Length: 315
Image (cartoon, rainbow, N blue to C red; front, top):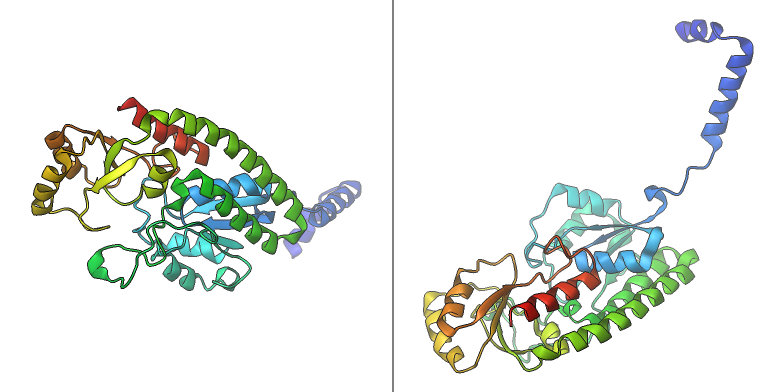
């Protein structure tokens, strides 16, 4: 304290008064609207993050735990994810059993704002017309089968209207004052989506009725929207790698199916797909199923631009 007084006494009185006045103003001056003032949203996948950024605009700060180049069923946990969830105002999940890794991270965050049933919890699948809902008993012997249906619903762009509605509902619960802004942003997003969808459907006409094989059952929504006919899978059961015996039985079944393309995700080993493709005279096309799955795909619209262009290029 004595040293501080000595140092302050070295300043002229006018300078000292001005310094103290400026310090007082800085302390009282409101901080600009930086990221700390934005709604902190954590999503399970990059696709949800992209749509959240679109409808949230400059009111949100978004972090995706899963990356587009990762298998969404198996995202390795990190302590940093728990910290992100701990500070989150809202969490958005795909749901339908896609992310079994997410709930333990949320529980570890101890952030009651984002727990299921809280205002900050959003299940983006609410209202989505599900495909592949199993009938009867479901157990692990059937592979990675989801009781509520196939969870890869974001791969039909029409389902973005449900996803965006669920996200906006969550944002309005967290920040009611900006509800009109979020609705306006969603309408801008939907208008752009409608225009892009018209172009995508027209672009996809050469794919109508095309027989394809997929590695994993990621693509039924995409195939249903753009008219592809999926006639087989490289995996014997969802999430179970193919054995040599299974592939030996699959190849004869596909030879008379006039299969042109084998579609697979970037995070699976393509050795089996290449072997089948060579045997039946097809091409393997590696398609990113999510935003960020390849550096060129930076938003939700770019995902379908890339996928359709890649398929058409390989016909």
